[in-house]
Length: 607
Image (tube, rainbow, N blue to C red; front, side, top):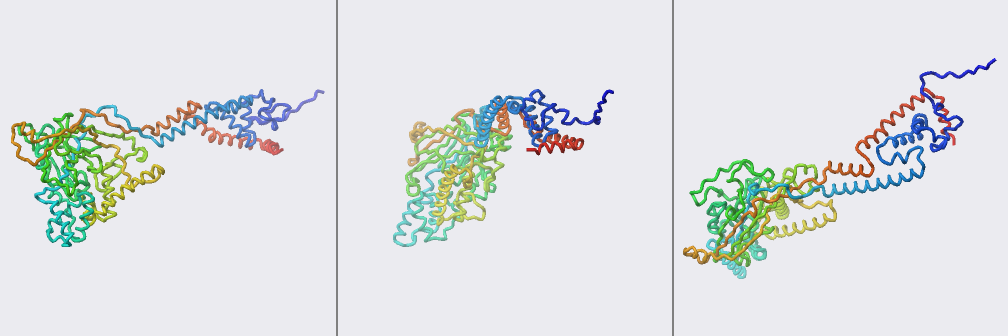
């Protein structure tokens, strides 16, 4: 009778167990993945068996093998491929590590460049016509500070010195002259002030200080005497019609084309003197010329001129020529020459600045000596910045936008305004007062003659402090510099070239068959004009933005490793969602074959 073979019935519709993948007569649990017995088994079967039925460590290895087989990163699949010989794996491991090294090195260098120099300054693509910007503000500071017929400084100072030697406490000098002398101490040379200021402060401590600017204006030479006539944009003016008195560290100066104090300062009461005269560019000599259009619209350094014609505020010119520039005939009377207060230098100091800023007398100036003609050709230095620079910090781009840095006294930010405010605040903190030309809060007094030594020392101390902090910052970038007056992101400065020649006013007048009557007047001529019709602006823009950094890093990764953004997404996918899916499949298998799983765990625990 034939033997009947009875086979164990297997339940239908059940997931296959490890026994269906086992090789007959082979101990699968103890076999290595590189065993020769497995060389004919497809790698996909081995990887899936490890993930679904192997131990946790074996499942992790299987998941890594599956990722290396599917990833788009070059070289990884050859390192972890199941049936790949060991020498090939070592070969690809060395090449892959080398590629990773070069990729990381270049990306790190790109990141450092993005951190250190994300901004580049270059020439703008288009030329800027000169009518797009204002004509420079011209500040003329004469070395003759006083009209001798009003106040004879040399005589009064000599009398005071003689009284001091006789210990007569200035008996020969009245109070009005003492007050005027006290005011002049603020504009005389430092060694002169050091000699006379202590005497005045000691013997007349009650000398008022609030009217220093008014007293200096009273003593100064009038506008029409210093500048009899001027020319601007081919129209002749009496200079006093287009000049403003302004208080500077050089004393009382004459200013052309400056903004009114109410447009520069948040409150014009922050400064001690405001010229009551209003400039009128319609008041010119030749009445046959057509009148200018009325001033309308506005101007700012960021937005430029808005709805303004030729007669604009501040003034501008259309073409670059001497005829369309600014010309002033300046005259100095020899009897007013002063060698006691202002030493040996005689003539005029001329400063050029943008209208929204105050002139810094510590900067470069143009010297116009008496008896000379000086022609100044101006080339604007106009720096603009793109709006996307806002995404970069001010320290990295090394400039401030107007909406980023708010000054206490000034409406708009500029480096010169910031430096002026810094000096004013430091002087107030050290001396409890401000020098006559400085902006100050309403409740802070003007420094008197007894405070001259204090604010002079405060200015020297601030300069030394800023120099030391700047040097220390070069060694330690995290150190903050006091006031931190970086340039404005949109700025306008004026570079210039000078031509000078001797000018003899008496010979010129005689050449015109006129009679020269003022025998003690020495004339000078100053001409300022734009050098070119157009100029090249400088544009500050982003060299390395975030998008550029990502693009460069992506290009480096793609060149050396073939990595794209999807490669990173794939990496996250495999080690997040696929792990969760594999764990879910392992739990289902444990529920269906609990005995097989227990035997598998025992085998895994065997030494």
